[in-house]
Length: 139
Image 1 (tube, helix red, strand yellow):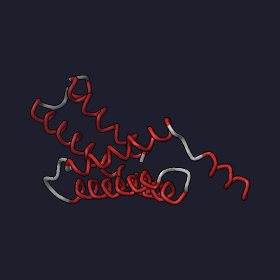
Image 2: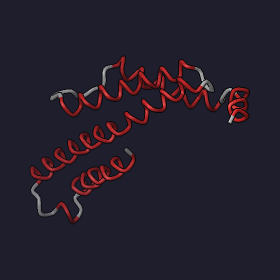
Image 3: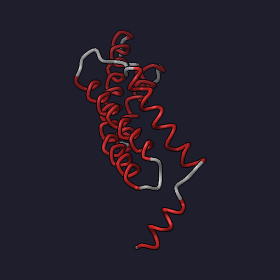
Image 4: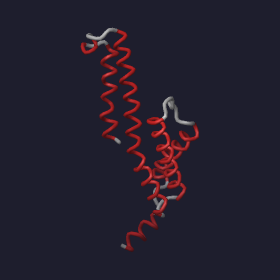
């Protein structure tokens, strides 16, 4: 996902060059520049959605591992699994459904709760140290 999103930033760079009126935009008439800007902004949106498709397996795997680990609350794992489903639904809809432009509020809220709860839990509470040490001794 990171590599795709990094390469996708090229679309934003082109938009900046076309909008800024630099030397690269000189051969184009104003109407052509506006059309090209719209094209590259659409390409950026599609590239972002494609990048999220590659995030989905990561979120599903992370959710599963948190759920079965015993080191963190199972609810966090469940939230991450549901967020993975939300990412999958949203990215497929962005790529397949014409006119789909905005993530439904319920899906966005679910993703946000999981993405905020997981790192906050790690920062504030951490893992269940006793279980972590028991697992280490068992190996």
